[in-house]
Each structure stands twice: as structure tokens, then as C-alpha cells.
Image 1 (cartoon, one colour):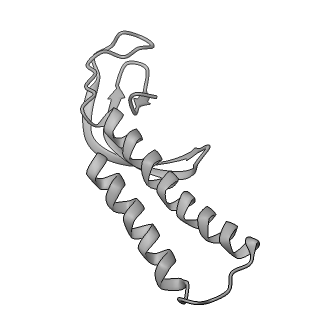
Image 2 (cartoon, one colour; image 1 turned 135 degrees about the horizontal axis):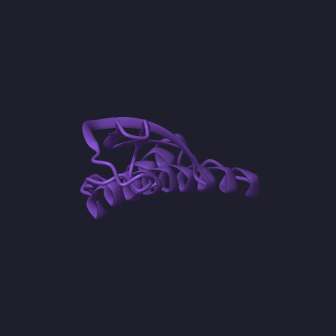
Length: 107
């Protein structure tokens, strides 16, 4: 995960330098816009990576609501709106046949 985040940061910084023509005069607004763009790219990847990492290996067998036995439905993708923006998470999905609820741990 650490290597993935470093690579994403490096790619965002490289893109910034590709878009900035050497010798080009920048205003403070230009500099802020460029820095914010790099920051958003890194922020999105960090949020995505950490969220996936936290839920990737989590296994549950019992429904937290009714105590019934959960069925593992495999890896599923879920779109989540977070403080950093929209994330697309891939995690294990469980279904409880007793109370008819789906569970996408850790929450």
C-alpha cells in the first residue's frame, strides 16, 4: 500500500511538471491550483487504498443484527461517498438469509 501511494504521488507530481512549461511565469492562483490538483489525486488514492486495505481481509460469519449465519457472496464493488470524495471499494460482501440484510464490512 505504501509503495502504491508513493507511486500515485509521484505520478501526480510528474503530471504537474508536464503541464507546467519550464520558464512559464505562474501566478499565485496558478501555483495553488496545481498544488491542489496534486493534493486531490494523492488524497483520493490514499482514501481508496486505506479503505480497501482495512476491509480486504476482514471475515465475518455471524450477522451482527440477528446472530444468524452469514453467506459469503464473494468480492463486490461498492461506491461510497467519503469526505475525500467518491471511493470505489472492493470488499467481501455477506448476506444474512435470516434477516435479509447485506453486510459490507467493516461498515
